Length: 309
Length: 126
Image (tube, rainbow over all chains, first blue to last red; front, side, top):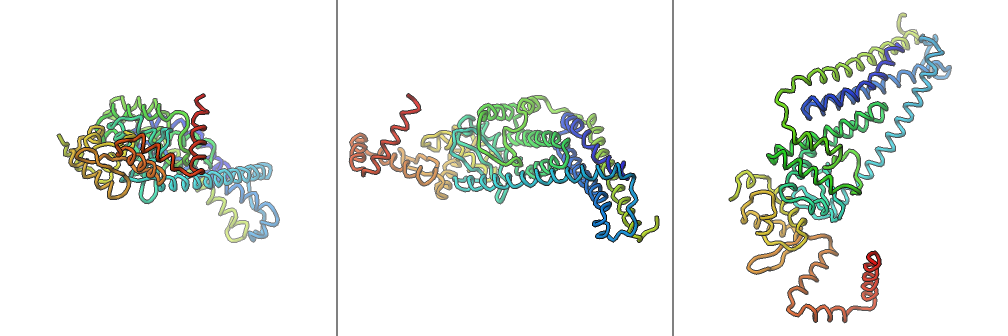
């Protein structure tokens, strides 16, 4: 049982490398879905495993054993092994909960501030203009969806480039990319290795929006130029915004521009194995943690005298 | 030549494009100027219609220029007042006299604020 539950804690370390390969080899949209899906699955399994360790540790204590109506001691591998694991798990879960709550509160505050700021300015269609010399642009989810652009950004692009920028931001809103970013943020708080996967998901979201913008304006070079110019204009200071709000100039811009200028590969069959590996990681993690938790439940029932050994 | 694809885009997107062009220009724009600075191939009549709609919504301000209107985006209430003062001054043939009279009629508080603004403006440069 212990070995099975340790597996979900180890699998996430393989994910960052796989996720990067997935983004290189798969179409951005497929990569975004598979990477986010597996990251969320692994995060859930990590939490389940940590939770099982904590409960195992607690049930060794007489008070909790009485509370759980155990009539005989819980049968576990070895106290030398289980108790330190439980202590580490409690620490891990506490850190996870603390950083997550802090980050969630900060983001909600930033999001409210951004919505208020966007509501204050004049709106035309879905566009909110913020009168500020700093160049910045981002998609602001909510009802209705908005795209927020500073006057500094508008002035540093020409008409066609502005269209490409707007198409990029609208793609973020239409694709619900803030859900992916929020999921990535959540997963990153559950396991340290998933923090690097979050960066891959952020880049994938931008690539998806870039491709959508390129097909909306029908010109890959123009989109690449708009992204590059926006990034150059936006260097050094912008408007503060929550991390789950996708911006036009987030992520490694040179890579995005390079990808836009490259001719899209016709056959992406070669990348299928990365998707399979990602799915396999998620499956292994889920099966291991589910089996581990079921086994733990059975042991508790045995200790409660409700089930046969 | 108007491109059919651009004409068919949702009204909200066209309004956003026109508004962006107005903000990017930073000076009052006629529908012709807006049409030229747009990245899309919209007919001038379409641009005029969109500008009129934006004006009805109160997000752009317009004043007569020649035979048509010139449009500026409405900022906030204060920005709007400043714009109105500018356009009043522009309308007067003798701008200097109008400005001199305006300053002469300012109250002591207004005068103090104006002086502070001018001093703050001079400091960073020199």
